[in-house]
Image (cartoon, rainbow, N blue to C red; front, side, top):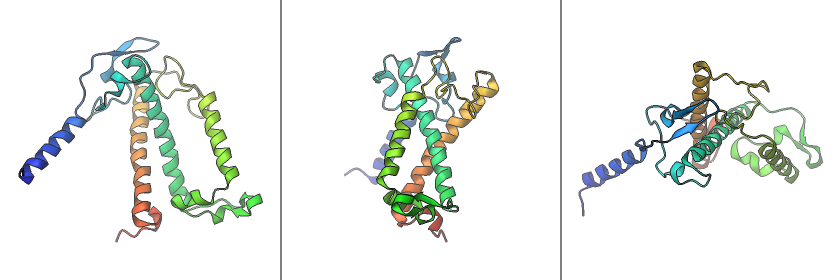
Length: 206
């Protein structure tokens, strides 16, 4: 049997290889020009370009450029959802709306428990409304061709933002970084509740 140190080193080497930036040479075409992928939104230090599964090269959406554009847009959208979900989880644990969530079910907002347990009390009509809203959003709101990933033409509060200045690009990179953090954060909240059996706000860390 190999010494435990050898096994540990081998595991660390494999992990480091997985997080190493991949060799890439293609460029992303935009409405203005073509630029190396290292300059694209979301390709940030210390990881840089991260694609250990070669999804960009072997993806189903056409060329590597098209695959990158699609997956980056999906990442931005999921990051925005995660930021809203994280804020919602924290808000729900401290504040509930007044009145009825479902008069037909005699269900008030104050009756909805914190955390994942809330999923069990949502009536069927509520799930239908959620599904319709998500479906409508996917059908109606589309990525604008030639624009930054995640640009659906709505901008901040419905005001379109076409500025591609360095300040705008910095803001886009900040958004995707915050979205990545939020995705980890909301998953951490779920994991904590599953492990401890109660919402994060009710867990004693002392």
